[in-house]
Image (cartoon, rainbow, N blue to C red; front, side, top):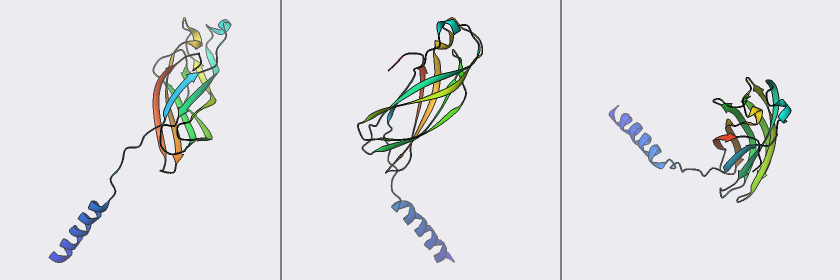
Length: 149
């Protein structure tokens, strides 16, 4: 019985010793920007609006990436509230390449502000990729407002 216990412990230690060490993965650089503009006439309007965004993804990894999905929502207080939005993609991004994708999100203006719906909003975006090394996930929290890259 003692030899069986020793054999189990030896097997367990051998299994732990031969497991591959986990290496840190390099994540792509992600920047998100609001690209739609709400007209001045609607500055003090409240209610539902559609907002267009662009996300630039720079692949700084040594392998090709395939952008599969972006999940985005607003956090904190801002000019509007962006409901949790998930957008599917199938965009290849080669090493060293930067690609820009665009998408729309449904937002809500709860109360008017001096800057209106074009004022700053803080977004949390999660970009999900496939690669030859397995899935890659990048999270960014960024303040956006109407303007280009």
